[in-house]
Length: 333
Image (cartoon, rainbow, N blue to C red; front, side):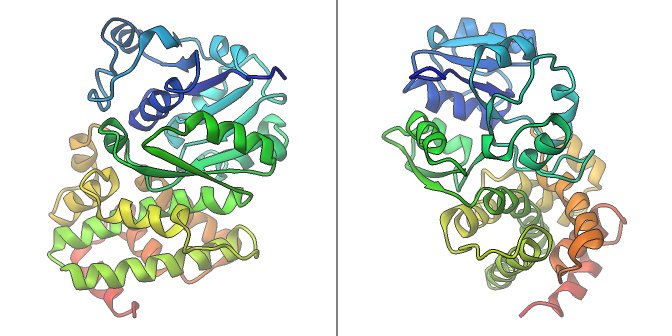
């Protein structure tokens, strides 16, 4: 591996665009897989993503864009995967370049539906990527605030400290502070689950529940997250008070920039799932994660997860949100 490894970002959504902005402030070149040729050409000409967070200013001179995923993967030693979970396998299946010698960080924040695994587990089981070569980037950090260069914090998780440090240094800017962690799977699962709870917070708001109930809902959510991880991931102690757990949950549940809260709010106001998704310009990862988390918990651990169960009943069983939440209020404390 070279002294200064090349880094590539796979994906062209809002979070991928924010990550590219951070990296390009530190690196002479960032490799970027963008699926749409129109998007790639627009970024080259105008220095911003035309579809996602166009307020993020990019330096095209530092970007090597390609619509060929093999081209981008072959050019880099470190990969950041920021493709929505529902589409990860579709893109990875196109690869003819091996992944086994790549260092891969997940910024997916979702469960791969084909395997019911988070990205690191999926790549290890289906593509032979050693777990020691995988990591995660997570934390309370919305792309919209990155665009405004508001102070934000990220946690970079990896089993190898050198890998985590290199990625953390590459992402750190005057407005992005980074910390390192060895808790890779716990942090990645927290990034998945918080989106489900953010949809629940949005549903509650849409139904007319106030701040008092929201506080109870979120405090129950962080405890439910801990139970889920202990039963379904591992029995290690996870510090859920850290920003990658509680902080990320809070900002996703309360922020006006949260697409998952926005999606839930529409459901609470009476939108059908289909109509709410049509209104969204970005993917609400929590919708897909709800089904996956429900199935995983049923098959593996059977932790007590009343919020996940409630969201599954609303989003997939078509039960009325008002009725489901009346039942949910009796299960919270």
